[in-house]
Length: 284
Image (cartoon, rainbow, N blue to C red; front, side, top):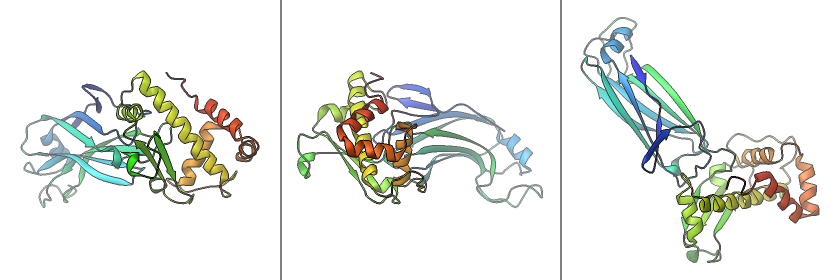
């Protein structure tokens, strides 16, 4: 019925197999995906009990858990009996993504029909074959919306490289509670995020520094919050859940209370502990 090749990710001028996780991804990184699918429409019609003139379609739909967005990416109509190889393309904007990206490919009935066997599908959109590929876009680093702007037009110092905005409602959606602002006039930082999909050694150093600083701000913010305590539970995709997940990754053997006491007694010592936890500059 259908034989699907692996999804491939276009990075600059190269195509690589689409991995299960993109650790260097950020919201400024658009994704261009490609795959080929060999389809035998007549076999699909026969096995599904459809008439020979049933119109089929190969469809791609993506879903992002971080943004709760879902949209079609590609659609190819299949008429006639001949088998063919179809190339599917998905061009996804980074600002629309986040969390886990799920890409569904399906062979569907493109137009409704009243013909065929009694048990044959009738409605347009009925799925005859499908497969799914998931990609984790939020590796070990905290990921959330970001924007590259000129700090001269804001209240932030012109010489600052980045600024993290963070909300105080732990039950608020992460997507609406966090925003990383990058100063476009800081060439090194802006270039590092622009090259995040294929970073140079200098870019890795900048990204490592930003990650360490953002993680510190987030956890210091969490430790100051009275509701951020051991045993607290927060719904998925909320700020509290994001902060709890970050804490568990960086301090898996420690309690929140122990790190709160550490932070309150010596903020500088806590900052050094966090540098060690994020393994700053380790991959450079």
